[in-house]
Length: 92
Image 1: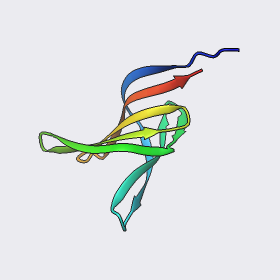
Image 2 (image 1 turned 90 degrees about the vertical axis):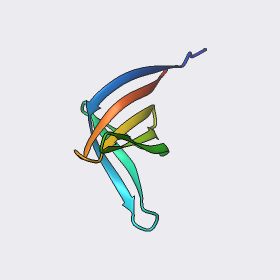
Image 3 (image 1 turned 135 degrees about the vertical axis):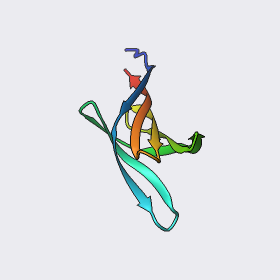
Image 4 (image 1 turned 180 degrees about the vertical axis):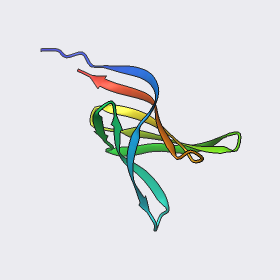
């Protein structure tokens, strides 16, 4: 039997809840779980982390991988708000 797999990309831009860890030795922050629309995504790997400014506000972007998805998260350092900017779900 042949299965076709495809990736479905969605631009979201919705608020999410994020559980994270902070390593005081390396001073690295890493998202561990993301809650969105009643579903909890457990982060398996943090890929790219970069920062940029929107005016005075520093925005942190985290690209993370879960079992079934790629998530792009944005953290606003002024409002302390997390947003799910994009999700790519692996569909069977």
